[in-house]
Length: 382
Image (cartoon, rainbow, N blue to C red; front, side):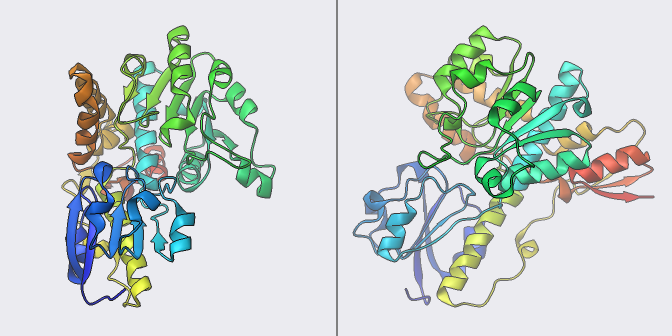
């Protein structure tokens, strides 16, 4: 593949393409869910997100020699086919992991305020302790929260720091799913939580899925939710999305359109990681540091006043209830239009920045300063 002038086809929701890759050639952006092989007849490079299935049907007969996905997950890419065809491939592991973690933390702090509990009094179970789950683990540990970790592939290698799924279901007050979608092999995750598992949830449990929608059996979840009003459900991902089940949404306390990782920082980081990989593939010099491509946050510093809480700072950067309201508003549309509306919420998602773009200054109580630092904010004491 020549590097003098590339024809690049990319998902229209991948940001900063022109700023990062524009000097490499011509960039054509398209809706990721409707890409076809006809769109790639002159493409050298294909850059996608999780909604585009990349396989023989899409690539056969095209000149594509490099595929990149600006996502952590790779279940939408047939890597065996790419390898067989000699097509280079790169993903963006960890690009938006911090954004997902901060989504989870903001949701949990919001539910704690809403339901009147203290997060430190709860046991949190993390199912899937990879890029996202391990980062959530580290922040919750710094906050002093008791954790149960379930990750069979890691447990097979590392052993005793992990627990069985049954024990986690029996003992966790809050369950956070961060698994990839695995349909075969010794540790499949499709319908990892079915009717049997869901019925084991503790009274008053909170179930949050920000991994893959199909990790939970949607039909079983609907049935259990109808029978168990004590449960609090938070779904950012849905089985069969964008055609989400309209009967399930009213039973969910917070719902969002698969945007947990949609921070501007995470999106640009994903594009940057693909740019790095493409440069390596082409034998080009390494690009400038990521910070050179990140814009300054509109709210970069807050001078703390009396009574400031961590939740107030979180909500300054991200309001999960806004996403919930936006998703619910789509249910009033005709059925044929809801899927497009789901995708439109993702495409037109407002700018959201990560915690470390905000510096908190002023006279902070030591406990609050420690909490904010554990959450990921920058803290400067005066």
